[in-house]
Length: 361
Image (cartoon, rainbow, N blue to C red; front, side, top):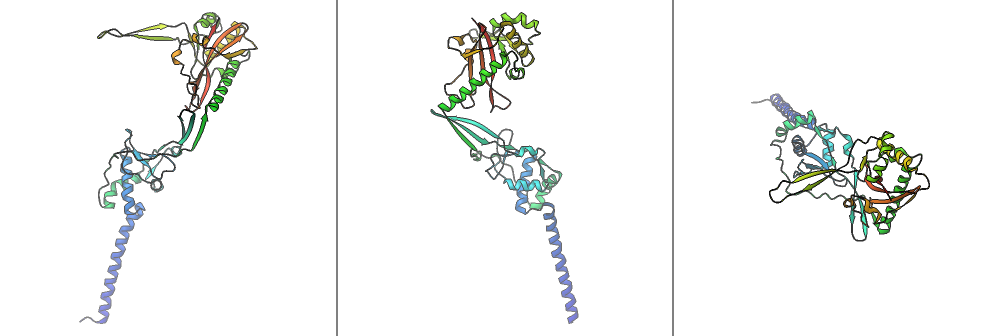
């Protein structure tokens, strides 16, 4: 028969064993939590994110007002699960992933145009962010250990049957009616005239007139007149203008390509352009005042590339594709000068540039 002291000793031993057992279980669970600092449901999600990144899926943020990210492949396919932005940010803070390109975490903006019969709408929206997340060594360890930690295999990655709706709200919408567009065209023409004046001024703004993105072409009549003087001034054009024409025979016949060297002369910026304008001013003794007017329909027919002219009477607000023909008169000499609206480094920004110059009777 057990005495009271023995009973006390037995219960004490059992209590100590129970405490040690509980402590062991707590320590085991604590080890899992201390390694990941995540609940089991979070581990399931994190393992799937890591698996997708390991298989070269990119995380994309389509718009700032949407609270989830999209996994996208190079083929523009999407996965069928969408981690929240806050969760991916938590994974980054936990050291499981890193973004070497921190600058890619900012939304750029882009602009497009919508037209109906009476107005143009200039719509500005936030562009997507394609994150460059990389898995850290800590993240790779979690990816290896995930099946044991969550008690099952990592979820299978499946491609979504249709893209998720992520329509971004416009940041800004500006409406242009016909009078507003005409005002933009008028401003373009004023800037184009100033550009011509700068090129033909005795002390011209060489940096401005020689910074063309498209280069300048001297028409055949003008080049035949100034070529000798231009070469004496040191102008040795590096290129020549070749026009290709194609002819096709009947069925089974071989097609033929012929090349005709035109008498026009391309002038490459910036050095050749400086010498070209210098020669033009000297040869024709061009000086103030210049008379610059819009070319008539009959006068612009001397331009050999009529198929390139796509002017619309109601162009978009960026005036993309606008081409204007001017007649320039000075010292009893007349020239036709073509000015195009050309995109700069960003296609959202255009400016007038001198494109083609020819002398006319």
